[in-house]
Image: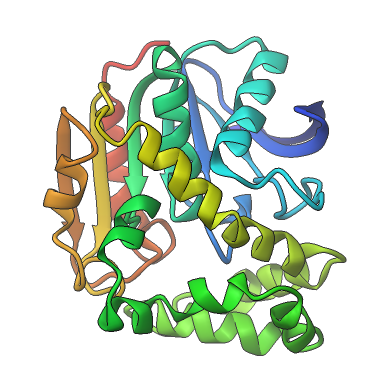
Length: 287
């Protein structure tokens, strides 16, 4: 059994919470919405046998600070860069899911010399969602639009965090009961914490800045090897977009894999399949 340690550090002006486990070449795991770094509980013990695994709570999520601003993905990538600088880590293998994949993509573009390889999980890049949006996509991405409304989501969700999260975890999974029991209760507690819902909403409300940043370097492909994974049965990603084509537009060295019988949360729904793919892709990474 590897030791799993929890730490906080002040970096890029905020107090960041992260999990640190194992030793060896560093592998960074960035969670998505509506999760925290608890999302990686099935990956950390496995990857930690071979690598040093670091899983932060992103700005606005979990035990990390939830300031009023700074949620554009360039600044959230700076959060990660500052965290790594504080830990004396230069070059990494980077894994991101959902919102974390947006941060990871921006990090790979802004700090190309620091990323040896990149995994993006069940994510359509922000710029491409904005470019392709139509009535069908808007219906699937209704929460993007709802979360943009100032203050209203926080008001409606307050006291109903359990029902709010239950909708996403049931609707976004192949097996609606995948996230239940202790796992579901852990997320409910996290999102009942002061500022937690507002922090997640602020992440989405940076959308216009994120699209503008993505347009600035849209013609520059990610140069490191990229593995794109997605759940084959999630209506808003694998069933709505041609994912190999989407990520071929983003990366010059791409492997694209759909995970069957899986929705939006592959790392939680199909951890054995995801772990096998991660271990294969990380093979040879020595830091």
